[in-house]
Amino acid sequence: MKILVADDSRVMRQIVVRTLRQAGFGHHDVVEAEDGADALAKVAAENPDLILSDWNMPNMTGIELLRALKAQGDTRPFGFVTSEGSDDMRSTAEQAGALFLIAKPFTPDSFQDALSGVLG
Amino acid sequence: MTITTGPDTDLVQAALEQVWESMLYAVAEPVPSTAGALANGLEATITVSGAWNGELRLFCDAGAASQMAATMLGAPADEEMPELDVHDAVGEILNVVGGSVKGALEGESRLGLPQVRPATSLPDPADCVAVSWRGAPVYVQIVSLPA
Image (cartoon, rainbow over all chains, first blue to last red; front, side):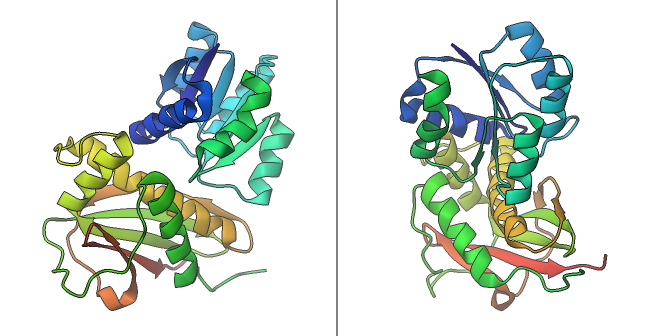
């Protein structure tokens, strides 16, 4: 499977990729995007099976990305990996169609819990 | 309801401890009394606006920042990191601390994007939450600003 990781921090993208590996998902292909707009373009170009996105990004935020995808009728799994894990944001994410929200800082266990049902 | 009180230092301390453990694979220990003043310092800033308006400002030595970036990227500890990655890493540390702080505030708030630059002035350490990175001080200051 192919996973799209969207985060405006290159360092955080590397940490997400490393945590995916530590959580046992290292055999999947990973594509990186540096903001929501880049992610939207890469969804079309790369056809990922799963999208992991930061929330707070320049150009297009993660929630704007999710809403843009849903407006296109996109049904692929989408989850947030974000520093903001309040109840309000979890509710907003869920209402927009996100499957899960992983709050930073995270551990491999939190990735396993959120992703095992999606990636198997 | 308008909330005028900002985040307390215990909240920032707890967020730093979580970041040290899960992103830097270290224990956030107190700054040793032998630690010198910051030299060649970096300053990261992130704004919180809404029920409380203010900034979190993180100060650390550029050498410590480079080591933290190397740790976050899985690079050798003594590898000199590009400035872009160092600023990115320090900004992301503060972004995660800011996310924890924002989540604990009552009312609606917005978190800005982190900005990192060379420090032009240093805060009084007594006004900051301070933790040690391999013996070097890392300070986080909570600054309330007008709405």
